[in-house]
Length: 138
Image 1 (cartoon, rainbow, N blue to C red):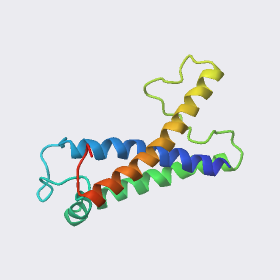
Image 2: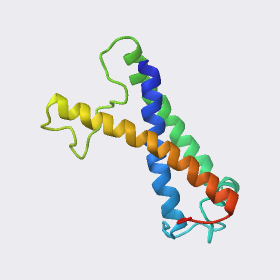
Image 3: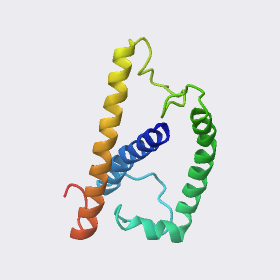
Image 4: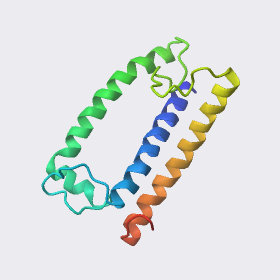
């Protein structure tokens, strides 16, 4: 079950970022200078252009490196190290500092539920954007 919880947390975190990213691109937010060939794209049309331009290949490479590094912690967890699913010891904002165990568990449950909601939200955003050829807000 630890591996499944790890996967659920990872997918939820990715979908939380993807949902915000999709909406930000559709609302016109860009990182300047915009690479050649990527001007005026929506989030739904950016994939193919980004593959042709080469940007998504770089994203794939960096994600592959991050996945390989995370596998060390996951394999240790599966061998009984005591590491909790999704805990990489990275809390720069200090969300878990100075909290009781009950408060920490409540924060973990909130993250899990928000991740589940983001997975549904991202699926809906992708579907609406492609089916109705509209940008955010739909």
